[in-house]
Amino acid sequence: MPVIVQTAVLLVISNVFMTFAWYAHLKDLNHKPWFIAAIVSWGIAFFEYMVQVPANRIGHTQMSLAQLKIMQEAITLIVFIPFALLYMKQPIKLDYLWAGLCICGAVYFMFRGHAPAVPAVPAVPAG
Image (cartoon, rainbow, N blue to C red; front, side):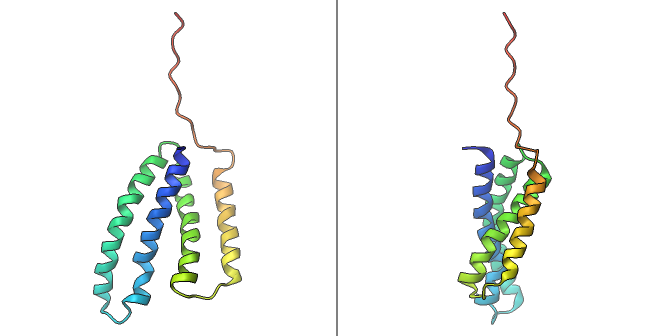
């Protein structure tokens, strides 16, 4: 599986955990003290980091730090919109489309002309 695909899949999984850690307490724990919500969120975030750290290590073998960051931001929006609509029951807004287009533009500019590097295969000396 290509590095960029491995990285993207792991970042999607990571972002699902992250999104729940950051926002689900607003729906599920809003009646609890903030520190209870923080402890629960930290517990969820542990699983996010268990996937996010390997994702970034794998991705960094062929992508720049900036490319990893913009990829993560695009994936965050891809994960956040269904979360907001389906889990948090937020109304859809046209602004989601405009924000998505801006992020697509950022992805384009970050990756244009900078395809992920393919590790060099050492040349075999002529005999």
